[in-house]
Length: 427
View (cartoon, rainbow, N blue to C red):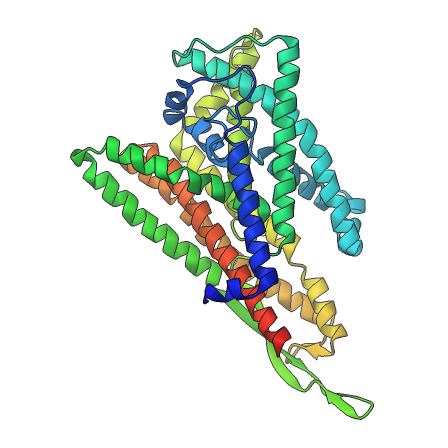
C-alpha cells in the first residue's frame, strides 16, 4: 500500500488527521492528575507488580500517572462483555441485534454506555482503595485520606474521563479506519515505548544478554504469528447467474467470499486480559476484610492467580473461547447466506439459503478453531518465557507487543480497504 495515496484523498486524509488528533487528546487526559493525588513513588510500585502493570497497559499509562484517565476504557470493555453475553442469553436482545439493523445495534451500544457509568464508579473506588493498600504494603505511606467530598470529586472526575475516552473511541470507530477502543490502548502502549527504552538503557546489564535475546526472538515469533493469522483467509467461491432486466443483462460472474482465519482480530486478547484481571482485583479489595473466611478466600484467589501454570492455562482458554464468541457476534452465516441469495448468487454445488448457511457454519467453525488455537499460543508465549527466564518484563512487554502489532495490522488493512473502495468509485 502506498501511504502517499492516503494524503491525496481529501476525505481519507481528514479522517486520519481527526483520528490522530483524538488519540493525542487521549494522551493529554492520561497526564491530567486526580485531585488530591500526586505520588512519585507509585511508579516504583507499578514496576514490581504484575497486576497493576497490566492494568496500567490498558489505561494507557494513566494509572501510573494517577490521572483522571486511570481506568482507560476498561469499564467499557467490561460492559461490552456483559452485554454481549446477555445478547446470547436474553431472546429479546438477540432479536434486537439480528433484526433491528443499524438502529438495533445502536440501541445495544447505548446499553453498553449506560452500564459503563456504574462500572466506572465501582472500579474507580476499588482501584484507589487497592492502590492505597498495595502502596502501604510496599512502603508507600503517604497516600492521602479522602474526605467524603474528595471521594465524590475524585470518582466523578475518573468516571467523566472514562466516558470521554469511550466517546472518543466511538468517534474513531465511526471514521472506518480501525476499532476506537483498540486504537486508544494502542496509543497508550506506543506512548510508553520511549520511557521503556530509556529505562532499558539505564538498567542494561550484560549478564542479562540471554534474556534480551530471548525477548527479541519471542517478539519476532509473535509478530510473524500475528501477521500470518490476520492475513490468512479461506475463499468461498460464489457465482451469480445471468439476469435480464429490460434490454440489459446482469450477472454471470464468479467471485469469492473471503472468510478470515481470525474474524475477531485482537478483541479476544483484550477481553481475555480484562477477565483475568477482574478476580485478583476484587480479591485484593477483600484481602484485609474483618470476616475471616472472606479474607482467607480472597487470599486463596490471589495465590491461585499468582500460579504461572494456572494463569497461563486460563489465559489460553479464555483467548480461545472469546475468539469463538466474538466471531459469532461479528459474522453471521445466516445473514451472509441471505444476502448472497438476494443478490442472485450461489455457492457452486449448494442450494441458496439454508444449505449455504450450514456450509458457511461448517467452514467457519474449522478455520476459527485453527485461528483461536494459533492466537492462544501467541498470547501465552510471553508467559512461557517468563517461567523459563523468571522475569515479569517479558509478560507485560509481550502483551503490549501482541496488542500493538495486531492493532497496527488491522488498521492498515482497513486503510487499504478504504483505498480500494475509492479506486472502484473512481472507475
